[in-house]
Amino acid sequence: MKDIQATHHKRYTFTSLLMSDVFNRAIPWTALMLRRTGPRNDLNTTRSSAIALLTAYTLLLGVLLGLVWAPGWALAAVSAPIFFVCNLPFYRFLWSAKGPGFAVKGVAANYWFYLYSGVGFWLGVLAHLRWRLGQGR
Image 1 (tube, rainbow, N blue to C red):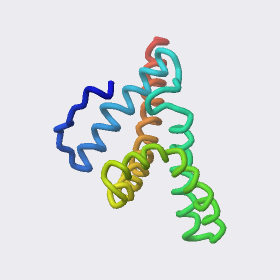
Image 2 (tube, rainbow, N blue to C red; image 1 turned 180 degrees about the vertical axis):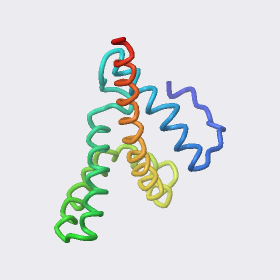
Image 3 (cartoon, rainbow, N blue to C red; image 1 turned 60 degrees about the vertical axis):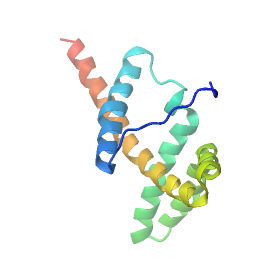
Image 4 (cartoon, rainbow, N blue to C red; image 1 turned 120 degrees about the horizontal axis):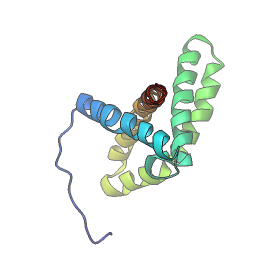
């Protein structure tokens, strides 16, 4: 539907975006997917997104390890390009739409998105487990 375009007029602060993404999206959608059909390969649940999520955390782990143990930087060095390649179509879009400066900011924002979405995913898994335990009563 490229003939129809719209502009999103909501205003978010970092905190309101974080709260909305985690509590209004990640947790309920994860719990719903697990209740209904299990994980799916669509929207933000593609294999590429799952790999990006994993590498976002291995990148963070590599940096934290690297601060106290030099070989930890190797984990970060391997994780960063994998994360980048997983999201390359999105970054190309940002570059073509708004230029390189915007794309660089988008990479940073996208990285944080994956970190807090991972938290939301695990909170959603916990919500699902709580629901399952309640079904057994």
